[in-house]
Image (cartoon, rainbow, N blue to C red; front, side, top):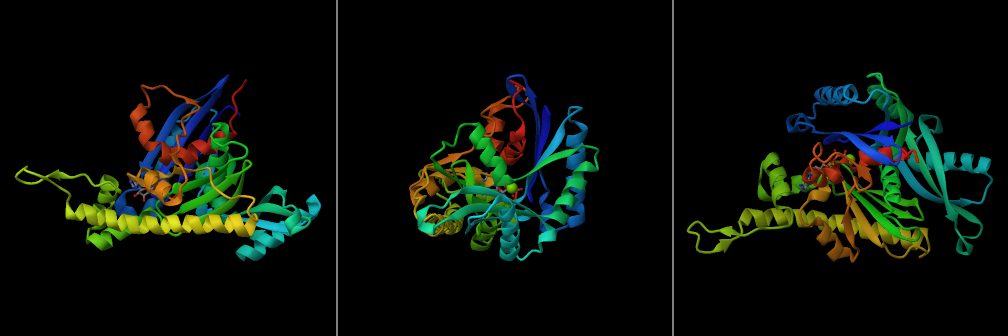
Length: 365
Ligand SMILES: Nc1ncnc2c1ncn2[C@@H]1O[C@H](COP(=O)(O)OP(=O)(O)OP(=O)(O)O)[C@@H](O)[C@H]1O
Ligand SMILES: [Mg+2]
């Protein structure tokens, strides 16, 4: 396999990149990003949204290099992921134990889900002879539907990865996660914002947080009495950073009252987001790992919500953890004239999951 299209079909933005493995380098050939029109989302018009997705897929697949296959970053709503501590068992036994544990935890019959697991480590003396295991499940019917949606265009889907697995692999390839580091991954999407914790190259924890991009926009809309499109605009323009402007007679600076209100609405949501992360991490630290994992070395931010002005500083100040915004293009070669560097910087966090889906490509060294 030497070229792949990584696809991430979000509820707000549709994204894809095409990457070629060429001798000693990974080269970006194509990049596609389309926002689903607001009108379709506002009306929750599923039929038209499906048509829009189809148009997107048709375009990227018709413009692909002849032999490119597809790798999908699975949306979080299709994935169930949980860390379990189970009695020590042989590989065969573990497989049945995990099927049972996952079915019990998520209330899904085993035949309706594809279940997989990753052995994390031996739990150590505190828990006796037990194993720590990350269980993963995806619903079969939904997966088949998604694969068919893409394969209908005559292209082969060769890999499916939960988005946080794709990002973990990307960060490891980039050398951005050291073996003994504890790294939080925060994907701020429109309808999902997910928090995962990586340790020793594996995901040890995953939670879908309550606050997401749609909720922040709604908070601005409600608090400032703005129409939803104006609230979205204010969120992107202001974020957490108010900029004083000249007063009408240009004699002094003022900050618009409505700007301050937007910042207030955003801050209330981000306070909730941060306390959700704090609570989740404490649970992982004390309850799941008996303080083996004690603090995060850093948090990596992605998803278009990572573009919220001032968010990285806000999280750092509240959690005392350094925050980095992901750069998915770090190890890729691309033609600068085709992909303007400023544009790439701006869309990096948005497109990151689709780049991550291509991390199964290796250079042909
Ligand atoms: N500059 C910005 N500042 C703040 N928020 C932004 C900015 N640009 C986009 N967003 C928000 O990012 C969200 C979309 O992010 P993203 O594209 O990662 O979502 P998605 O992957 O389509 O959705 P999901 O993963 O939830 O299905 C929207 O809520 C949008 O309002
Ligand atoms: Mg997303």
